Image 1 (spheres, protein in one colour):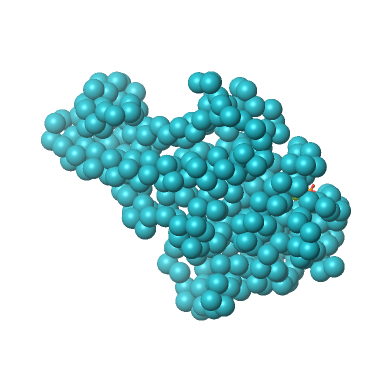
Image 2 (tube, protein in one colour):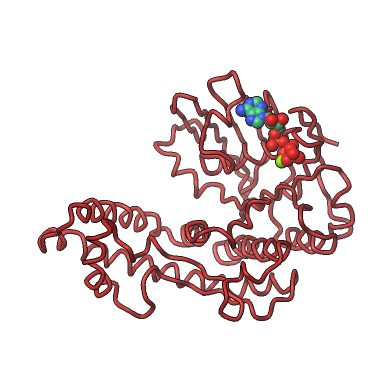
Length: 362
Ligand SMILES: Nc1ncnc2c1ncn2[C@@H]1O[C@H](COP(=O)(O)OP(=O)(O)OP(=O)(O)O)[C@@H](O)[C@H]1O
Ligand SMILES: [Mg+2]
């Protein structure tokens, strides 16, 4: 799926923008504060229903206004066009329409237009806590397994119920029997899906990484959320006393993580800032590549400020890998020439100049 046309109204400094994009590489350039990241934000919101910069709609909607409106024409590889429209209002009200039909929930959007974001904050994938890496992992599992979302929701519900029971400080065997067996089944299933996905991803990641940086000792490991090779039911039994004391379930699929280590040490301790960015870029590219190879689906890459923290040869290698993915890419830069010479010779780049909230095609 690619974005053929995008219309934005009242999002940050973008009062009214209408743009026709290319199915390949789209470069948005402009001075600081011109609105480049806001365009990526609009695309991300259309794909996922929320911003990647702020949870507060008041920050996203243009100051002084009460709603923002997004509309896109999406083109699938067979050339079929879908019309996607979204309104978000300050009072929390929202509507999402696909080909004129109102979608009952924003969650239905996520599978329509898979997007990957690479921006200066995405090094958080290495330096932040497990939840960011779990989200990363689950993005892939979700797009590869239709059953994942239902299982994930079930696990959330069972854990919520179990945790509120734990908060009472005691839990009768009959109450436990109403959560734990179901939770065990769901946790083991989620675990299988996550582990299998990471196994598929691993070689793709290392192959892409080797083109970017030489890190022979880097390892990618999976943590299920409880001790490896142990039955989750035994873990719940063993940790019950402590769970009751703490008032929440300590071990389980809600603690899953992707571990990046170098010689057994957390990779963040050993990698330079630029190396961290390269590892994260390889992780993101790998998910896009795998989605295309296994599912035959393309994901859209939003790449904000690619040049930040990267030298010229690494920018060039990333640009080449993005082109190799043969997918739609939106990349931002301050000047029009920051990435000149980075793209393979002859590659057609559609350039857009962003100036004070207005977008014009070069
Ligand atoms: N809710 C809002 N209403 C109006 N303007 C806003 C709002 N939020 C942010 N802005 C402004 O929108 C402008 C565009 O911001 P954006 O982050 O998109 O710029 P950018 O082109 O990515 O800049 P940079 O190169 O510095 O990253 C900024 O001037 C910012 O102050
Ligand atoms: Mg920006």
